[in-house]
Image (tube, rainbow, N blue to C red; front, side, top):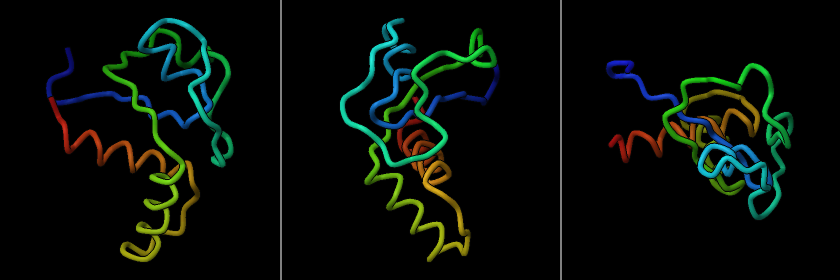
Length: 97
């Protein structure tokens, strides 16, 4: 057990990893995503055996909202995948259990 550390997979709609973590099935979640470069349809070698504690399914609307918050409130010009990951991190902090 990692004291004080929680590892959470953030997955966009239409990907399989959220369902894979929770059910063991490579089944796509409902919807699709505008987020480029993530949302795999397979489990990659670097993910196999990773010590994940949880997985969250993140809506595009949440990822896009966070992307703009990061730009306008923090001055970070990032893409939707960063917005998706920060959105997941914020969700984890709201429900740390």
